[in-house]
Image 1: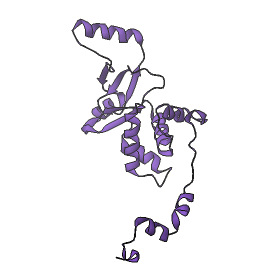
Image 2: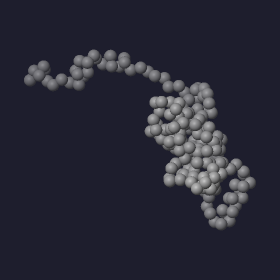
Image 3: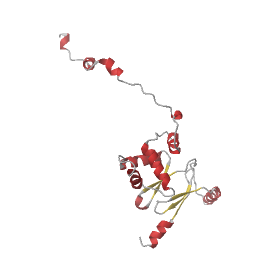
Image 4: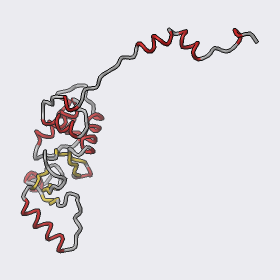
Length: 188
C-alpha cells in the first residue's frame, strides 16, 4: 500500500485548517484579578465577595430590592416586578436562580408563607448563625429579635423541658401582623 493511500491523520486535518501554530496563538492569556484587590463599592458587593459569589448586577439588585423592603419579606414574583421596571432584560428565571444562590450562600433567610410560597429577607450583616425571629402567618413580614436576655430565657425554658436546640436558629415566633389583622377584620 502506498503512503498516499493511508487515511488522513488527525494532525493532517488540523493543519489543513491553518496549522497548530495559529490555533495556539489565538488563545489569549487572561489574568483573573485577586478578590482581595477588588475595591468593593457597596456593602452588598463585600458580602457577596465574602461568600465567594461574584457581585453580578442581578445579585446586587436583588439584595438592594430586599433591603428596601425591610421588615417586609418579598417572594420571587415581587422581586421580579420591582426589578423588571429597572432592567428590561431581566427574566423571572434569573430572579429565581439568584434568590436560590443567595439563600444557599447564607445571605438570605427563606420563610414559607401562605399557600407554600417562599418569602425572602436579608440576613442582618454581622449576625451570627443564631437568630430569633418574629414572623407573620402570611410570611410577608420577618423581624429579627436581638434581645440577648430574651434569647437566654427562651433557651433556659427549652432546656428545662428537655428540648435540644443544637446550633440552628432556635426560635421563630409566628404571630399575625397588623396588616393581616386589618385584612381579616375587613373580611378578606
